[in-house]
Length: 93
Image 1: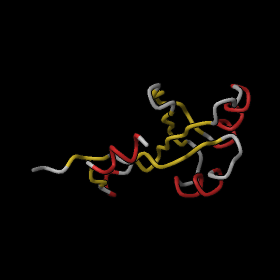
Image 2: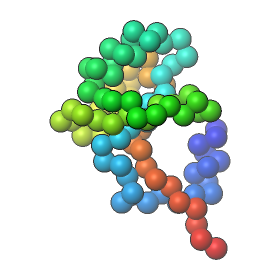
Image 3: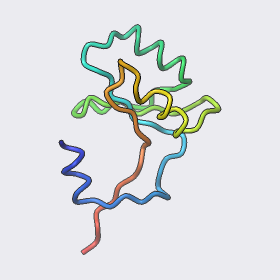
Image 4: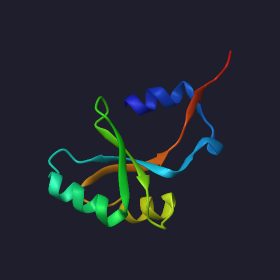
């Protein structure tokens, strides 16, 4: 819901996508062991946590693209959502 509100007032600039970064929100009761295992399997490095959204930003170190990783893991039972790290800018008025 929060993302929807933010996106409504912002404009996505596709060229500002961080080509080797993704955002992941794991499901509430996912253990640290499972998260660590998935991070290693995918080939990610944690950049920072965003506590208010319970989301973590990761840098991709594998040879897979953002799109390939998202396609493969979007239905993973431990992942609530996984998406590219896009920059959004407010419209100038």
